[in-house]
Length: 420
Image (cartoon, rainbow, N blue to C red; front, side, top):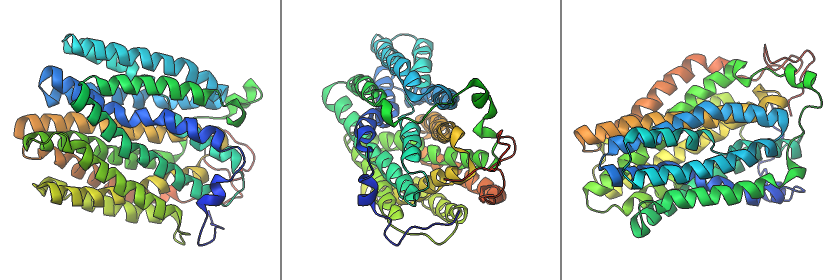
């Protein structure tokens, strides 16, 4: 899809769009807890069991549950409205998080902790995809859509700067359960405030016939390719969370965990700002290949780092390589998926990150328990290299189809689809 933006797409112009602040502020508050969830579970369960393997497995159950149920949440939001999905979701998530905390603190059997982790992950509110869908409503036909995609990625990464820092500080300075308790409270408050913004949510289908027309976004081949690439990104997030925690504990400085992860997230955020301020001439699918190759290269060096300065420097480079891949992937959704299925498509990608993160924390936790010495950092390397191989083999599926043709076979549109 050709870009019409200038050399300065304009964050200022984007943020002056009428009505956007009504969903941006509560959306930011509601998505903050997601960045706290995995590390809060890891730190709590590791404290109560003494095992990073058990902690990683508990966090993995949460991530897998979110990855499985998130696309259904997105599809329901497309059909029945975001508010109808959010209200019960935030209540279930809050109660489940509190139950998981109580079970861990009372040293309940690990299977019981896992059982509580299932609804905790399944009910994670999909605020990021919902905000992106609201941007789509406000910016139909606007050249600022790619800027909005960059802005959302920066916002996501800003949460990953503050989220792990806040969770780690609460768990180490106050109580191991403080991070998860705060996450549940913020989810409830932010989710309810976001759900209250009814005027900015996308319209639901006017009839049952209109709803049936839209098949799953998963039928779009490009979405499936993006899911694999986002799984690799999830392996970076999950592998680094567990491995950084193990590394800082091994040197007797557990408080540095949040700082090192914050450096990684800060690099991600800063590169995201730059990506959104540049009018790229290369096609998005080509930019994704280049950006992902940089991510795989930098992530491959993490396992060899054995000092705080080197690890911080590499973490910064890895973070700077993540944002371009995330931004470009989300931008490609606009050209590959019809408007009526975009919330679902965004949740597939968000779920893929969560699933990759879940697998990564499990494997990295086992590696750290058995081998120590930064073995968990092999997970980001392996995940990104496998995803890069898939991306290179199937990158042709990411090229935007001609405007005169339907967006994708099997997505239920019988008339040409206008790409916003």
